[in-house]
Amino acid sequence: MNFSSKLLENAVYEFSRLPGVGQKTALRLVLHLLKQDTGDVQRFSSAMVKLRTEIQHCGTCHNISDSAVCEICASHKRDHGLICVVEDTRDVMAIENTNQYNGVYHVLGGLISPMDGVGPADLAIDSLVERIKTGEVNEVVFALSATMEGDTTIFYLHKRLKDAVVIISTIARGIAFGGELEYVDEITLGRSIATRVPYENSLSR
Image (cartoon, rainbow, N blue to C red; front, side, top):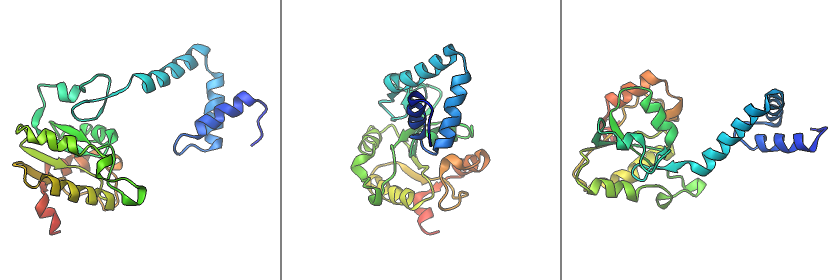
């Protein structure tokens, strides 16, 4: 792609580095910004910089947060004896949108995937075990994507938690194998949370 301006080329290159954004889409976005007021573009730029420099991760659940403890973990209205284990922040948002869950979360930060070089040590698993050791947790719900990596992660977590005095359950499989949680419609996901089953029962299916 030939550019009439080096500044334009550099901006398109940076946008094209975003996932799912090709050069043509990047060019369209950059040209759109060029048509906006300088103030609008500055606000956009400032929001991106503040996102990168000021964002935090909750010290309890590892969810993305504006403060050291996220709003969910800080809420007295949530059931802190119920922990939903998810892959990342997108899954927290998906489950929250169902309005079917009132517990707290634990964000692993990924899934075990030997092919991608991701092992248990790369995930927030030890902190989950420590949370359960406090004795305040009654149930742990595995809400991970119905993929090979998701099942591998659940199997590993179950082994780590099998001696803990907690109920271990998993969301009901109204979700097709290979499906990722963030793309599941809210009704199906909500029902899967509400009708969760003991993890041992899911092994026989």
